[in-house]
Length: 273
Length: 353
Image 1 (cartoon, rainbow over the protein chains, first blue to last red):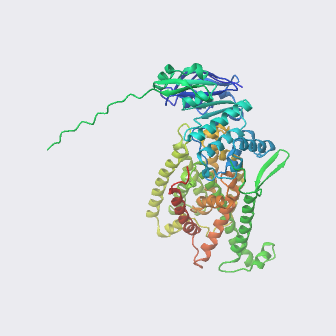
Image 2 (cartoon, rainbow over the protein chains, first blue to last red):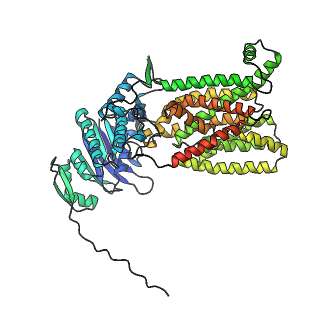
Image 3 (tube, each protein chain N blue to C red):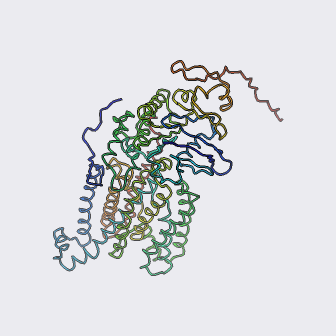
């Protein structure tokens, strides 16, 4: 399974957001795409999963252009967790997860043994089996995110793309979600590609980091090779000190000591009499 | 994490045979069966009660062909087609309402948003007021609905269809249709205007088999189409992104669903005028009764919608007898408070986080 972008240009009309970008995502690894806001990282992810058609270049799945593959065919191989997924009011966890089976079903075949097996398994590994009858709206943010990951897992794809899977979660739930993704990668060899806001999380969980800057790849490689003060200054515009993470010994960025800035009071306008 | 299941009894049973498999929801099945029973009872009551009451025994005798001539005329000629047209309209409106509510992800949506009601009202009233043959009414209303829906769809299209733009264009075009309809009502003869006003509320008064057969054809064509699009509808109800990721051809499926939803409503409007609130209420009732959401509720929604219109029409016939109210008055009396209740609920802050 290989997913790669070849001279990919993406945009929404007007200036391209991602320009002439080539990238090979290492199979069986966890890749984190990082960069400042508006650097094109989410756009790249949208392009990689055909939510956005390239204005030039191509995305290749095992050497075949995505646009040439049937959308169902792609859906059996690439799964997605969107940035802020939404579900109709009152949808139960079980029914959400069952929707992940769409690309494997037909009108006649809507609940095969295979479907049942994958749904139960997805609920089990995401620890949402006990919540299966609960309505999605009644869950905590972390539980809900796990239910959505379960849906993506029920889709049974070798590659899973996630757009900021930890945004809006508190720290404990962030770690919970990332641990789950790491386990899925280690235990099952699934390729994980995620856009992450938090560079330290990316360093800790990713085998491969793609740092984007102004629609292009600034650097890529293992975290220890890629992440240094120089890269962070260019990509994020922030001065940091990079120290080893005391737990995992991956690089960890600590923002440089704050320089105080004097805030001038707004000038008083002379009163007109 | 707790592993305890809050509802231990299996509510769902997998059914598999060869290449066929479904997950049957027992509560959904029970609701459908219940609605069927209530429906049959309502039909029996509808043909029995009225200005000339016919005992149920005589009704049964008539239906097997051994009734009196007058009973047969009243039952088969007048009351049965009326009940069945009510049933068919309710089924079509319910299914249409569910499609649009799910498609635009708004529980307050109805086929009105695609301009079906507005267009049908305008052409229907034009036929009644401008002196065209009244026999053209169903066809004219149907044509108005289709033209209006096509116009809304075309105007809302911009390299793709966004449900949000669909709603806004629908509202704008509905306003135009209302203005046209009002103008016709102002210039029309009093007697024509009165008939137009009754038709505009939605009425089953005086419907015959002539209204029933086209409606039946519509249902026979459109229900299988709806069933075929049901899975795509469920995927689309998540979000465009999720649907694409699941392998749904988003624009094609949306077009199919809008066409089927609009056509269902158009057949209903052609048969009985724009009966209000049914398309909006039936999906909510079905969701409440089944505890489900999405396309799975379709059969229950259709049945609940059908029963709802028949019951409301029975009330409309009886409440001020011998004066028969248009059924739309009763559905509005039931529907408007329900609409307010849902609005009230929707405006309350959401629990949890």
